[in-house]
Image (cartoon, rainbow, N blue to C red; front, side, top):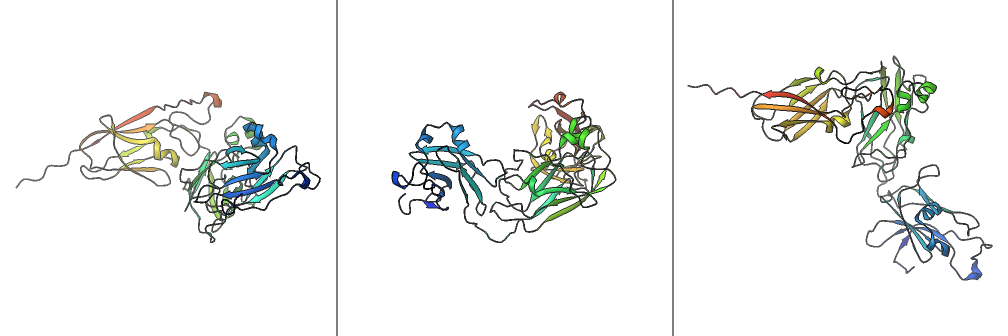
Length: 380
């Protein structure tokens, strides 16, 4: 490696003297490095001095040989592998987070023992500043069969899932084991400021094995505390500024499908850009409310902004252009859910999960409303 060509941010780990490629063989010892290319390119992991056989290895074999993760128990970081000469390179799908430590393990039959190193980019920031800004549902009472929660942060977070840093605690201070569903996928918003956490649907839904064995995580008539540890790391690899807790009261289970006939549509005054208000008799899922409701006029979508309030029981639409007098339609996609997973016309407690329609083309429910004409100006 030419001086200054690459910046290695990890100490080399040499073979034992008894290894087949010892000092007498004239080959360089194997080493794990975190490399930052000059000019600001994305950092990557490189194993130098890798056995020659790695050049003939399949992508699957390369992935088994070189494992990169945030800790020993975490799933491997996603990325691509390549071999050039006796160097094996791992390039992450997403850039490594500055300030975060990564464990790198290289295993091969030619090695007397696996190479193991912990590497990381320097932190760009040193003072924690990110906090939990909001949690949805925002109401104080949630149903016994609550299905999901949204955690919103004041700034972008790191890539790994945050389930390990979340827990529900009962009134006696005991953690409710297995409340959240551990997933290999990361349910983040595109800007990484909102994380979706699912309560285990196998425990929520009656009549299936997890529910029969463990029951629901929430008990009606009792309180539960959501606790989020400050050890959850932001995009700079720094912990949150503080721990977060929020107490929720648990109400009865909600097992009824959503009925749009129970919604109250309040048209805006004629003219101007006043908000169209739709009120619901129960809290609906905030994430779906942002994309499953809309306004149409003469078969064309009306552009505007949406504000959700009232503990997710109110949807307000403000158009970009002033309202025109005439007929409009409120459009609701049948994928809309309440906080217990009940959809329009279909309860979450269906006979079995296979009966749920997984069509990529949801059905539209159409609800007409009218913007009256503005009163004529008085004549002199």
